[in-house]
Amino acid sequence: MQLRPDDLLLVVDIQLDFCPGGALAVTDGDSIIPPINQLATRFQHVVLTQDWHPADHLSFASQHPGHQPYDTIETSYGPQTLWPDHCVQGSPGAQFHPALDIPNPSLILRKGIHREVDSYSAFYENDHQTPTGLADWVRDRGIQRIFVAGLALDFCVRYTAADGAGCGFKVLVIEDACRPVNLPGSLDATHKQFRSLGLKPVSTAEVLSTN
Image (cartoon, rainbow, N blue to C red; front, side, top):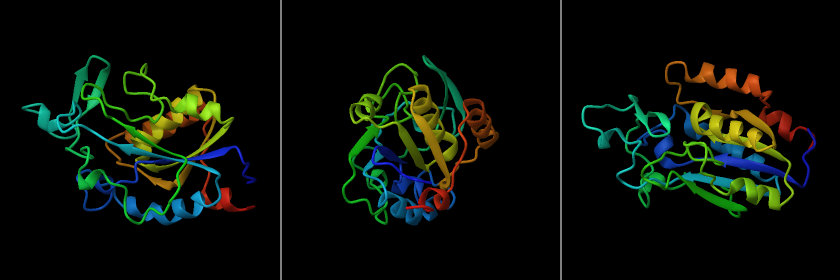
C-alpha cells in the first residue's frame, strides 16, 4: 500500500488503564504497541487520543449506586455503558503507556473531559452532536485518508472510524493493531457496522508493504 504525505495515523487511547494491569484492561492491549510504533515512523501526520475523565464522570459505575461496571443506563443522549473508574485526569492510569514511542505527534486530543457526556469517538462526544474539533483540524491540513489503530476496537476505535467516515474521510482500520474489550455482542456489532459503512480492515503488513 502506497502511503501519501497527506495520510494520517490516528492512534486511539494507548494508556496504562487500558493495558494489562490497568483499571479497564484490554486483553493483550500492550501487544499492539510495537506495530503502532513502527507504523508511526511512516506517517507525516500522527494524532494521539487520550481518555481524560474528571473523577466523577457520568460513565463511571461508582457514580451510580446500585449499578456495577458494564451495566447500561439511559442518559439524555441515549444508552451508556458504565465502566470502572479509569483514565482520571492527571492519574497514572491516564498516562500513555511508556512503551509508546511517538515522540513528536502532530496533535494530542483529550476526550471524555466533560462530566455529563462520554466520548468514545475522536470526532464527536457520545451525544453525536458535540464535535471535538478534530474534523476541522484534519480538513485544515488537507488530509483525506485516516488510518486508525488502538484501543479498544469495539468502542473508541469503532466510533472514531464510523464518525471519521461520516465526516467524509476515507477511513481504514488497521485491525491487527487494535484489541477489543469484547463485551457480549460488541465485536459482532463493530464488524457489522464497519461492513455497512464499507470500512474494510487492513493489516499492519499491508500498510507497510511498499514503504
